[in-house]
Amino acid sequence: MTRILLTVSCPGRPGIVAAISAYLAEQGCNIHDSSQFSDIDNDRFFMRLSFASEQGATRGALAGGFAGIATRFGADFAFHDPSEKMKVVIMVSRFGHCLNDLLYRWRIGALPIDIVAVISNHMDYQKVVVNHDIPFHCIRVTPANKPGAEAEQMRVVRESGADLIVLARYMQILSDEMCRDMSGRIINIHHSFLPSFKGANPYKQAFERGVKLIGATSHYVTADLDEGPIIEQDTVRVTHAQSPGDYVSLGRDVESAVLARAIHAHMHRRVFVNGDKTVVFPASPGEYASERMG
Image 1 (cartoon, rainbow, N blue to C red):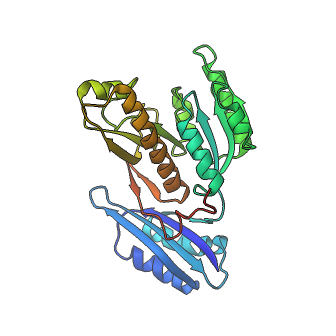
Image 2: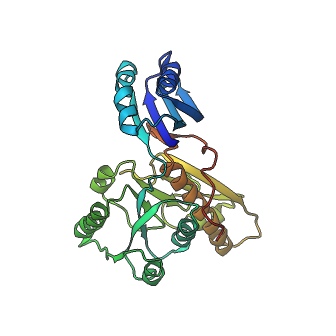
């Protein structure tokens, strides 16, 4: 049996769920897991199904037969092979906790992705990356060479065939052009519980305000700095007794976990952009399992 994922988004109309289910049944497919959501205010419907093709129907054949349903309901859809690993380029500066966490999760199969390159504007993590047999590219960025540096970054992305860029504490602002070219395909981790405490030193800002919760936010990158659709967030509790340094240390753990969960959701096709927001469905059974323990 071949496992396949189907993602659908369309205007909300009666009969769409019945039409999809009937079509898959007619093609000899058995639905294992299904999630759906109707945004009544914006008249949008979202659905994600995991199913098995028990009679050998291919993705191409299923997509061809589904075209009529898509036309009838005005739907955007895609059939995905969950066994195909998404190609990812990681970008990092001088804070390495998210990079190291992603490398570990990748190594044990908790994030079944294909890390095709790591790009940095510093040399700090060259040895770590190369020791994982991953190509490392140091591309320095200054105000004077920024357009050329971004062109070189995009060359690496294109030549590696990357489907996704992950900003693992990459401390450079991307140009509007790069954000547009990779719309919906750049994930950032923001070391703050957005929308509070934007910009530099958010943990210092949080400390000065005496907050009781600090957190992290992972979102898609847009031309509006730190304003892209949010994928994942989490928090950790702090008290008056903690120092700004404690905030940073506690924040590192939250950032790493939040970024990994956002990538996991994206690579399993669980995230749908809905205007300035996202719809994030739960994982199907078995999608959190690792290939090995460590």
